[in-house]
Image 1 (cartoon, helix red, strand yellow):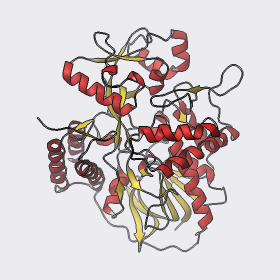
Image 2 (image 1 turned 90 degrees about the vertical axis):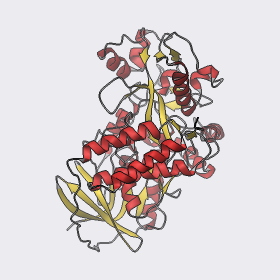
Image 3 (image 1 turned 90 degrees about the horizontal axis):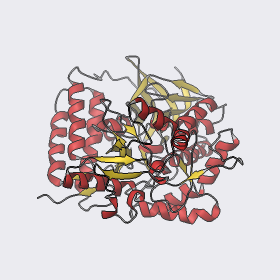
Image 4 (image 1 turned 120 degrees about the vertical axis):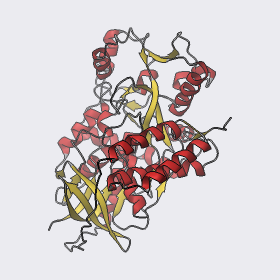
Length: 483
């Protein structure tokens, strides 16, 4: 029986950067549900936001607070911005290369709701892919892939490890510290931009364990997504496109966003998503992303993956416009933590990255603050673990419970849930729609279902309950009066 100093659940930016910060002499295990690249970090396009220098910190803080619509924890935002330069410098000093100009200076771009150009990127529109590959290359610790965590071993408010389902075998793995870095909730929705295996397991498991989730109603929908495909995961068209001049029009070529916000395409993404939703509902017109201002040479160089993928689908970009729709993108709420990533009242348990709620994003995440959050709070959590130095060789054993993980009918119920969440708990919500969703979720929870579907349903129920409890519209949460 083996015991680790630290178990990390998830191999995205937060989990891998935490692993990078844990010294080689520590016994560390990274548990990854599928192949390592199946995480949201891999698919992140735009870049990483940071304060450009110390003088820019107040402006970065202010932009983050403004996007968060009054619900950010100001202390959390200060921590994020004040540690941002250090995080990026650490990547560069360890050999990561951001895109540079001909003189070798790092390039910055602008995205919606930022007051200046402060987003760094790599590989043009492949920042997440480049960062993920780099962090994997830096990893010096053991990794268990194709395994999913199905239980947290908690006794008397202390976490002693996890139970994993590894190739249909259930086993306990013990550790002094467990870091949850498993990502968001994308697969709860019919249309989303997330990696296919991001399915809200750990959030649902926390509900089972009585661990608080926070602000689960705060879900961000990306406004510019190509959804005309049969895959659940839809193709994101990065916000950096609009930051560099792409426009949103209806099928007649009208730029309608200025009717909703004076910033037009550069309004925060919650406003752009809602504007598209409302305009399409009002007019019945299709919506497009236009790249008229880009030369083909620049577009292919700056956005190589979008160029290649859209051309493969038959769209002659940048000359040809692309049909778009909002789709679920990012979970702002999550497992409630303090500013050191600690889960309150459970010793040895941490949550970082998208799975966590540090309240740094408030009611709406500022563009490209997500990869930054993963980096900053991963380092802070690891520092806390190393300072506490609560490592021992003792093992507190737990019995393994015999549970059914899934039934044959679960797949159909899972798809039913995704449809309900998209129709009733997405961009514009009504009390009636939320109540209908809650009734359906409760009914499904009372049926014979496997534990994995139960995780999803419990997370979805928390989202709906949180949305019902917040009766006023704010940020990404829009509750509409019924006709």
